[in-house]
Structure formats: C-alpha cells, structure tokens
Length: 268
Image 1 (cartoon, rainbow, N blue to C red):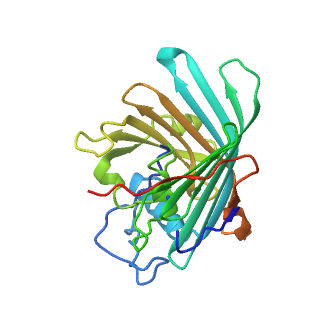
Image 2 (tube, rainbow, N blue to C red; image 1 turned 30 degrees about the vertical axis):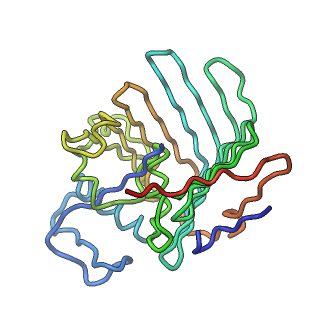
C-alpha cells in the first residue's frame, strides 16, 4: 500500500523570530513586506540576528540535514539518543516535512538500528514505527486550512526555528547568551526565557537556541522542560534550497504491518 502526500492530505518544537520595526522594505520573499534593517543597527544585535533568521526562513523552499536528538531525564539519570535525517519542501503555499530516525542509544547500551519515521503534510502527521510494526495517521488541521509542516511538527517534536516567526517575542524574553564571546564557533547563541503569560509556560522554562552563521538558520536547540527534562537537537550538514526528490515524502506500509490507525481531528 503506497501513500503520496498531496494537497488532499500533520512533541519537538520549531520556533522562529522576527524583529519588530516600523519600516518595511519595498520587496521581500514573502507575500507581505519584509522589515528593513535600521541604519546604524548592530549586525550582532538580537534584532539583527532575528531579522536575518526571518528572511532566510521566508526564502526557504527546501531544506535537508542530519539530525541528532538527545532526550535527558536528570532526575532518573536516563538518556535516549537518536540519529537520522530531516527533509523539508515547500511549493505553492503547501509544505511537507519528513524526519527519519534510524538509530537509537539508551543510557550505556550500544547504539542499534531503530527505525521510526514521521511525515507531516500540512494536515496529517503519519508515524511509522518499524519496531512494533505500527502506522498511525493523526489529523492535525482542517483539509481546507493546511498549516506549514514545521508548524505542525512543533506540536510533536522539540525542534526550533522554522515557523511562527511573529510569535516568538510574544512568548519569550530573548537575549544574547553570555558565552558567545568565548565559545561562539560557527554559531550565534541566543537565550530564550519563557514569559509568565507564554503559551509555553507549562512546557518549558528556558531554551538555548543556536543560529548557524553559515546559513543563518537554526543549528542547535536545547530546551529545558518544567519537569527538568532536557531536549537537545542538532541540525547538521544543512543543504538549503537544493533539489529534493519528491519521492522522499511518499511512504509505504511494509509487509506484516496492520492497517493504519486513523485519528481524526479533535473539534470543539
């Protein structure tokens, strides 16, 4: 049985920021005018960094990278480490995202093959778990109201930096991290403190967010939950706006799997 992610068809967190200014450029990559950099603005200021991030994500048509995900529970002295690949494509206001985890390492155990794939198409999240031979398809948006795939993914995975750019300053107090001067490398590190009224107040206390200077896009995220768990995401060897085979976003239900579990959208 084969599925293709089409226009009929999604907890990592993906976050983005845009600087608030009163002037706008005459041209931009999005359907709305882009903020201009004020004259004399410091290129290393938070506003300038976030403005570049906003512009790069606005221009994003495709993205792929290697991904490393470390989930730590200090109170239980437990760690889970996964590796894999991430793919994103956007065209005609519709987007698709796929995250393929291929390996797993728990605590002191040896790393082993562990296939778990997630596909977002703007309406549905499809989860394929090869260990338990199970497929779930969860509807996350209305058919006529598709959402950017990164926006859907942030409801399920702690990855930051590719969607909802206008909301971040409303949700967090954002500052340059103190260790930028001594340990910056190829990244700029920002500290995000959750505001008391933030919609994330029940999930996270703080987030450290690294912008990859080479591409002005997210490179690493470390989020601390209200339960003191730590989510660390690394996005490595990024390829930006390079062709991606559309077949990447297709999936098949392997032999031996049952019928997909369909979970419809919850409506009030």
